[in-house]
Amino acid sequence: MNFKPLGERVLVERKEEESKTASGLIIPDSAKEKPAEGTVVAMSKSVEETGELKVGDRVCFGKYAGNEVAIDGKEYIVLQAGKKASEIIGVFS
Image 1 (spheres, helix red, strand yellow):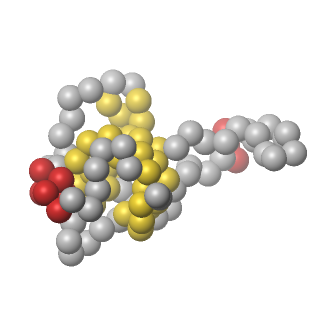
Image 2: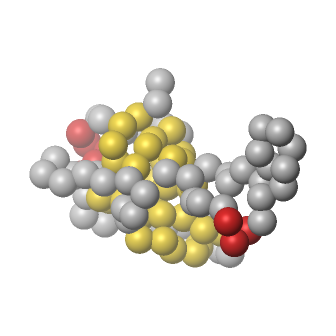
Image 3: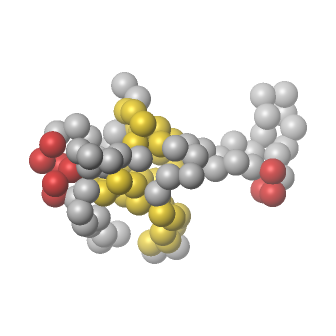
């Protein structure tokens, strides 16, 4: 993959969706909700310079945040991560 976000954005790979409940029931694709967390895969230079995020960080974001993109057949989400407005709620430690 050769994708570099512009502005104050980060590219995030969503966490895999669960296909079974804790009790073992299989969840059909039509009933699954997309997880609101993922891993930072790439970031713009301005986000990188702030030092708040780094590639590999696991982040949490709003349910309707970002723009979905497909790169090399894989689904990602592009999120704002700037000083004035950020769609990223927090970083897991």
